[in-house]
Image 1 (cartoon, rainbow, N blue to C red):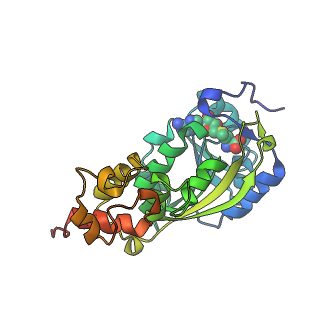
Image 2: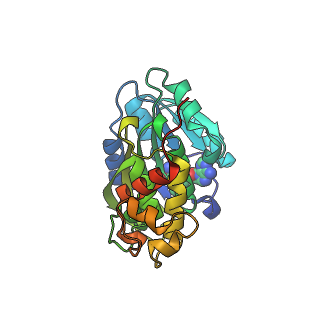
Image 3: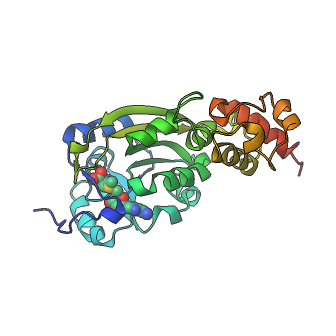
Length: 271
Ligand code: SAM
């Protein structure tokens, strides 16, 4: 009998996967290899954890809900070695964790059916540690995955698309209907793969400058760049980056934002 007796907690985004076909597809997409340091965010009642453990032998998981810790640990024993970090994923330093779990290459592989109320904070948190992450496989709301992967001209192209795509290759994998979860969410979900670019392929010179430009540009997405970037960049600077001051942010490709941010950040300082 399962030791999980608590009802699902809505405020923790608990929608537990129970569709074995979907679970198998996620494990197949992750395709764990010997030596991989796999870290799962929000193992819940182990829907992904146990099949991953069976395949891989061991993994680390981060779970906020204290009521789940003991039953998870108990149920995991027959499948493999689960190391459970008890707490908020947003407080976990992935760079330090990667150094500890994967001393050879300093990179972890992140997996998770994420709590949807925390999707964006978790994505931005992972981005802060992208150099220590080999890849990520996340279940999210389908609408969020569409925003992550969107290109210029799309209605859903925005800050999330630009910030993620500057640092990662974003590939939507498949859609998952509400019935795959208990309780069923109101919306469709989707699984996405993100692979951080190697350092020498990242064009952003200064992360803070880039984040500022993108935030300002999409803060007022109906305005022209000239107006939206008021106080951040003037028209000559926008033009110097090869962009039209009368364009709107949703028309500008990722590389355009990178050029403008790099220009504003100035030449790299030495030493
Ligand atoms: N992986 C399980 C599955 O697929 O059935 C559970 C997925 S459920 C959508 C999200 C999980 O994330 C829940 O177990 C929830 O308790 C956990 N969670 C919510 N907020 C969290 C946080 N800040 N840090 C770590 N885990 C969190």
